[in-house]
Length: 114
Length: 111
Image 1 (cartoon, rainbow over the protein chains, first blue to last red):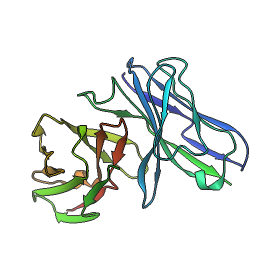
Image 2: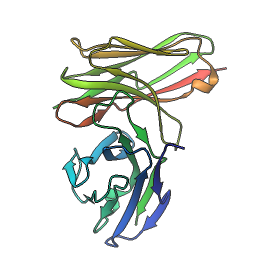
Image 3: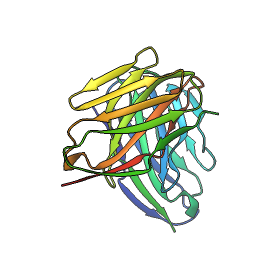
Image 4: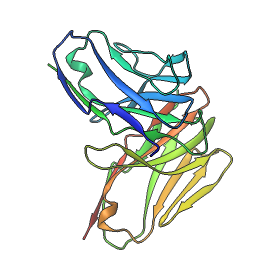
């Protein structure tokens, strides 16, 4: 089944403890992207990647890192999480930016930083 | 900077009615516009995507239109059902490679 898989689904961590949220797609998509969703603010793009080894900042990249060493994986790294990074995170992919088939989203990761 | 607005923020309609959700964007330089559905606490499900060169797309009871020159899109839902209750989001893929979402319209279909 074609899908975007995020892990973990739920995560509670403490301030300052490095964490990684994984994202993997099995559709050979070139474009991958991370979003956070907050009440009243909607979905905001954190980082995106047009292809392997190519990443760019979205609208809210501060406090996050990403890497794209292989096509299928696009992990989101929080080096020193803070409570304001408590949010619902989504990973998405598409064949390429602007692809006619659009974007496929993962099921989300609910992160709580205490 | 591209901004996407969805009005209304919330909408309640009786079952069986036809309804229209609105999405507006400030910069017409887009690759495409996509409509999604999101159930509470869940991920996003793609409904329809309209390329910048297209005027509309249809899937079942759903019809999405795009007027790029005026910066507007509508999602028309025919014969609404309680199972249509969800939050509907529109997103534009801008020419600067960013994807911008509206804040959504929370739809409640009254049985």
